[in-house]
Length: 389
Length: 223
Image (cartoon, rainbow over all chains, first blue to last red; front, side):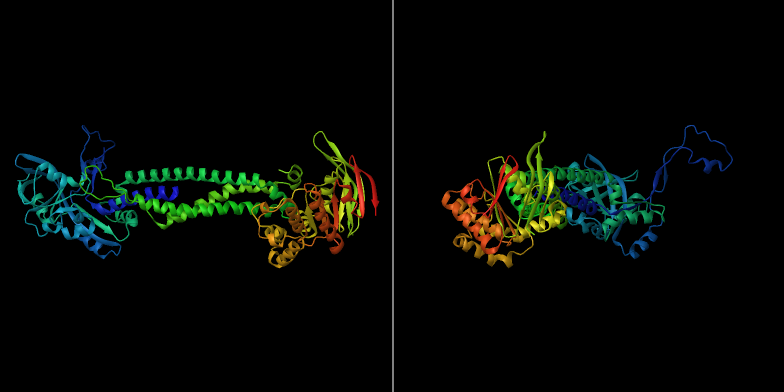
């Protein structure tokens, strides 16, 4: 029961987290590469081979690379032809200043094709007002995240001024609001890609391509293979969330530690019961030995008793664990800063948990049964019959 | 072939205490032998050595031509299961099993319980326990429990029956019934019986009597 409950809780939580990670953002991000400039990286560019050592004062610094994806059209062709790709969405993200009356808030304005973006991420599901498709076709319409909306004090149908870089402010009409539950995501805004490209002064350019795969578990492998043939920075969802995934690994280690402790206690329980039984059944063992039952017969008898305890315990444990998990699934919780109601604990009920629980229970029962069974097998009838105990 | 005991000695404990000294005798197939003597004379120890439950410190025991000390353990257990029956002072019936199941216990070693079930029922009928065969041991009287234990000892139709004070915990009426059954097994089935008893009357039922004093054979007599 404990194994099923603990595993269901942890795996359910981890499954929910992974689902959030792969649904809320792209599974593979193809971004313009911008690397930090390191010392002496420009030596050859300036002095070719005619130097022993270049002394910079001060050394060069800044970013090296491009602001946009190079040759995005070739990427579109490649992605459209790749059977492993479910959907992709070109993006132009621009750091912007949103102004309403005297309030200004800086946030990212993401330009996208709403139809393609809705196929790549779950953004359309998070709309609380308006529809995500409302920004299709341009026309200076914008969808604001809940947090950005609150900070600006804006509401639907109002017009906000959006300034991209040092360019002139552009009035944009608020046509929708979304709430993902993640404060960082909710401090962003979405507009039509052609609007954002025009405001940024980079028509037909994109600085990211978001990709959704048919099998998200292959993301890292595919991202690595693409990295070999393209100058862009390509990262999978798991490569971008290494910290969260390493935390999950810690959780898994913790789960197995807890399960080991539980199995140890259960094993000692079976061991004690069987040991007591061997003590209580000394006379029966003695008479069985006098009837010709050998050591193997006696060990088998007690070992099978231990295994019956294990099997029956596992059976009832699985049933109790299942119903406990179903009960946990009904418990509501409200994430911090969440206005969404009706969220319940995410508990995994997958078959492998139950198979593992059964195997672990049988393993613990068999290990715990061996010692008492062996001690029963070693008892000689003569001492017991003589003493009567 | 019978049982041949040659120069049997037994020492136990640390420091060693000698219990049996240089005991030799022969028991023919179909004999009824009683081992008598005072408490501590070594008669139970001798019975356990003859029946392979214990091993001698010196000497040897041959049963049906087999030297017990040289038999492989698997062979010995099989021999014990098929050729030997035991009755002790206490019945040692398994509390969780019915009387019939207890009687059938020796047959389960070789999965012969179905084959020998009719015989178990006939034994219980013969011992006046037919209507109690589905009861548990705690529902029987002391005499009935001991009769059930004898039925269990005889279920495999053993060649040898070893009985250690089988009437020791019974009243005289039940004790006589038990002895009748043991005598019947000897006379009607030809089972060789080795009986340890304090009771002189029961000992006198045996064809051959061996009396022990301080672990030595004091005298042997045949009737």
